View 1 (spheres, rainbow, N blue to C red):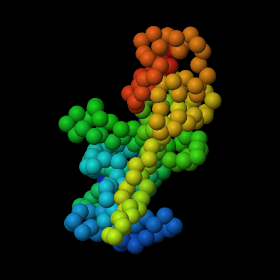
View 2: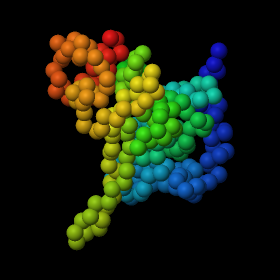
View 3: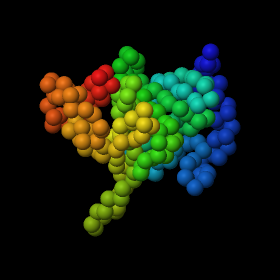
Length: 239
């Protein structure tokens, strides 16, 4: 049986490796060890963020409960997690200080609905083949899963400078996203781009005409949106 522990057991390891940096940057990534700074509005700035940059580098607006599975088989739960799309790292919070979760993460869940954790679960997974925007350690949000295919969503935030003529230039966080299909048998990633519809999936995957005809009997070929992609992946995995 794989061990299941709480994050409190791992805090000492993470703080020992991070807190001694005390706000300084380490390595070429510019990641700080811990956080005790505020911006001009008095709001806490997550590690890796830039002061006075508009928006947030985080996936969720609030810190939420979740569970983490490490590649060494250890599993743990915590009540205050968030994911930095700017750095592609998972954090936990203790007394307004933020620490990177120690260990190599296989996947993790974040619960957006604290009142009903069976809803609003976001599942992020790493270990996929390298793409033009990712490596084997990059996390993808798993939107649909089955025996044949997985529908994945890559998300990232970058900092963009906003030029104001006659005024002070500002910076803001800008979201980027792209969809992928992971074909399990071939162990291959298929890129769908950022704006997709079910017709694009039809043109990407090698699916026989009978399967497509059966799907389009109850759906339109120009269906758009994330929910349409999830519906199609569910259908293809079941047929």
